[in-house]
Length: 128
Image (cartoon, rainbow, N blue to C red):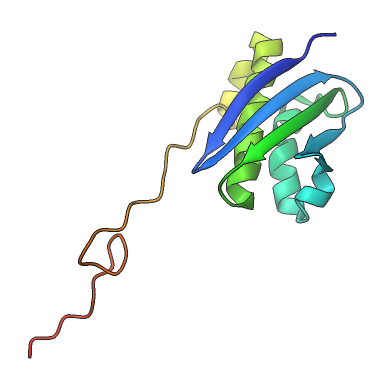
């Protein structure tokens, strides 16, 4: 039994995904996916690659995810799972790409500039 591993990133979150044939269990940081991601929206984001290819319940997934917030982590896991499924079967790539699951979202937080309150927000200007 071969274990396929892939990497998924989003913002500052990095997800290392290990995929193997099984019963459909997903373990995130040694916890169940439903426990780690309590909201249904985040759970569905993680499961989306399986739903698109209609292979849910056929693979066991173990994920180590680090950094970022929970939404970034969920999307990083989704990308990692998509990449692992493509390593397993190259014909599934066009279907995943059509759903936007193969694209690394390159948007990052803009850095704060000195002399300003945030990245773009300035301190209040006073003429006198």
